Length: 243
Image (tube, rainbow, N blue to C red; front, side, top):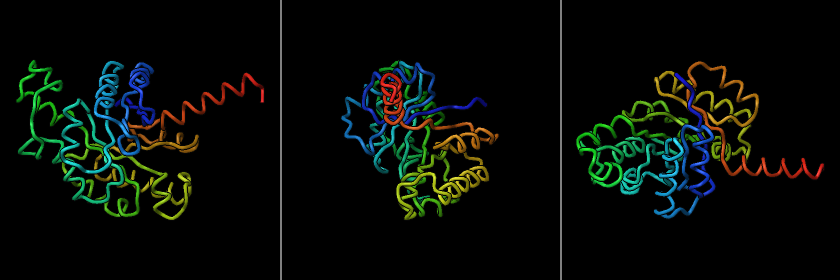
């Protein structure tokens, strides 16, 4: 299975989303947890991802049934749920994303059905197959309940949130702390035991090499576009100033 590489989008610009797709990224996590994104901004970003050839995922602020439905109606292919801490939360997220009898999502037409060119029955089957529900584990509570979370039908893969996990564990803003690294590898072990894919976000070369050596890691986050852009801009300035 080829490895899928994603990027967390923290710069609210559809042009950047399109560019990331053409740069070869397979999925983009559009952020509604920390950004004040309007519905029009989000829809344009989703379209830009589609044009660039990468899957648009949306990180919602919480398990909000109506919001998840609207985001999917706009064309999102994945729902990322931050700080997910229980199997009950995971089950609610799955139910919000799928139509009866598998969930509680209400149906409409519009762009996801090609404005009527895809039959509703075909779209229901397609969405059941293609929509991804992605918990983020970012707390001690989430770590404890991860084995139960992984038993919820419809959970597609799991993302780690090392920075928030470090804060929750009382370790400060240190995503590379040894205790956080141990916890992330335990997440991977739990996912592997359950047969659910795990998507790490390597913070340094050592972590990158470790994950690339794991035969069952088929999803990777490349970090956040804002941080990558800042690093590239600073590096270029330093190169020209020679300082």
